[in-house]
Length: 95
Figure: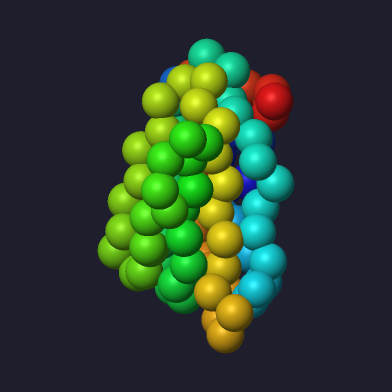
């Protein structure tokens, strides 16, 4: 976590880094009441949204996720996927 109300005193957004190892995926989840952004820094893979076709991602890709939308990211088989993500308003819930 890079910026949270507890860590940095911000009140409007939570910001963090995430690394998904090559060939692995984040668990499916949704942020109840939170709008999320995901900006790919390095690596490649797929952005998955429940009920939709996978979207290829690479450095510079930006994914925006509406509140309460189940989603996840999957790294390619050959390289880790590193991304900056955040959501507003900040909050700990994952569902």
